[in-house]
Structure formats: C-alpha cells, structure tokens
View 1 (cartoon, rainbow, N blue to C red):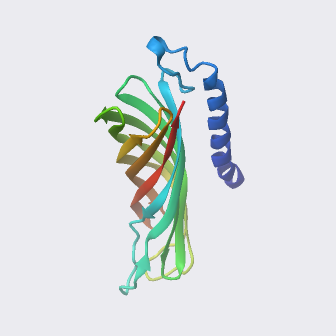
View 2 (view 1 turned 180 degrees about the horizontal axis):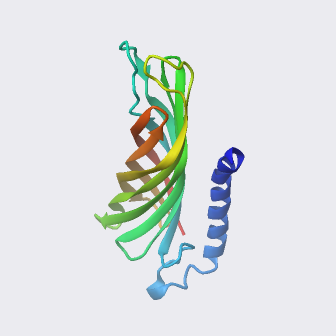
View 3 (view 1 turned 60 degrees about the vertical axis):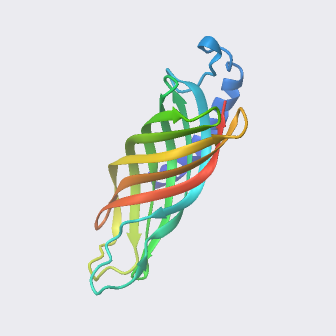
Length: 202
C-alpha cells in the first residue's frame, strides 16, 4: 500500500500528460468555442505545478522546547470549469517536513475541491476553493515530552484563496494560500500551504 501511494503522484502526472494529448484533438469541440476538459461536464481544462512552503501547527510538547514547523511544499493538480465562474480541481500535495524535539513530521495527500473564480479583467482573476484532503502523515524521532510518534491518515476540510495572472492565452502565473486539516499521531493539525507556480490551460 505504501509503494502504491508513492506511485500515485507519477500516475497523476502521466494522466495529466495523456489528457493534454487527448484535449489537443478536441479543443474546439466545446459549445461556443470553449475549450473542452478531460474532467466530465467541464470545459476550460488546466494543469498546474506549484511550490512553496508549508506551516504545520505542531504540538511543542512539554518543557517549552523550540521547534521548526515549516517545510518545503509542492503540488501537482488539474481542473476544469462547469461554467465561467465555478469548477472542480484535484491534485497531489506534498507538505514537506516539520522538525521538533529531534524528530520530524511529514505529510502528503490528495485533494478534491470546488473552485469559484471572479475575473478582474482579461488577464487577472481571483479565486477561492473548498474541499477535502486525504493525507497520510508520519511523526518520527524522539517519543516523549508530550509528542507521540507514529503514522495516521484520514480526510479533513480544506479551503484556500488565490490569484492568477494570464501572461499568454495558455499560460498563467498563480499564487495561492491554502489550509488543510491533517490527522497526526498526536492530534489534528491545521496545516497551511503557500505556493507560487504556473498553470497551463488547454
């Protein structure tokens, strides 16, 4: 199961690549010239890659020890729109590692969200999203001082805000802030992710 979970990001990349290839043959098949998407009932399909930083809300244990709860994060995602303002998005997220008391906490998972956007002009739009993230987490290292090591997993609420700048008909730059509820071995964590990336619309 662990190996299959690690292979899922690669499968997502391959699926996105295949969808781009299929979409090229049907870009003009949508109603009123809208580009089609491989997600059922959606158009204006897109794929994206973003990277940035996560911030775990970790239990510091007892004794007032300092710890670093930030990690390098990235995500790969794809989506499409039901109409000009509402759509759906799914993707793989890696939250990186947070450090405390000589140990580490790390998490990765998959997200499914509904997306709403508001265009500001022909190049800029802002958007919000709400959905759920299924994540697997692992806390390792020193077991003591109020920190419980081990693995956990489960679904949690997710939401976020972002802005997009379209610098060409197909390419856009995206900045996002997201919050994901993760299940850790010593309690739940509201983990933030702030990323910058690029998005290709097909």
